Image (cartoon, one colour):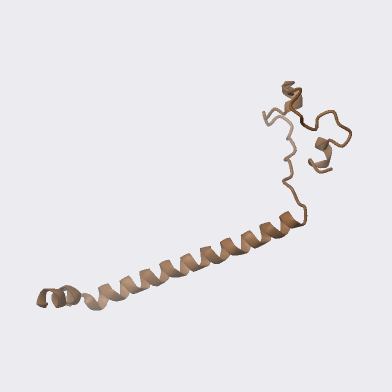
Length: 98
């Protein structure tokens, strides 16, 4: 029992050690709560955006950025059952929305 008391006393440095542990633990708990609340807020925003029908927008290709599109490479697949060739198919100009 004396060794346990000596451990918690830490040779007189307990007045510095234990409060520093408490401050570190409080900061970690505060960070956890902050991140958790931010996650919940962002999930709520995402759900609202998805419910409003917002889809992902395609990024416009900047001139000379080196990224090739399907039309540039000529690698369109035929017979995949996709929307290509249909009148209601989204065009690249409207961001993929119909």
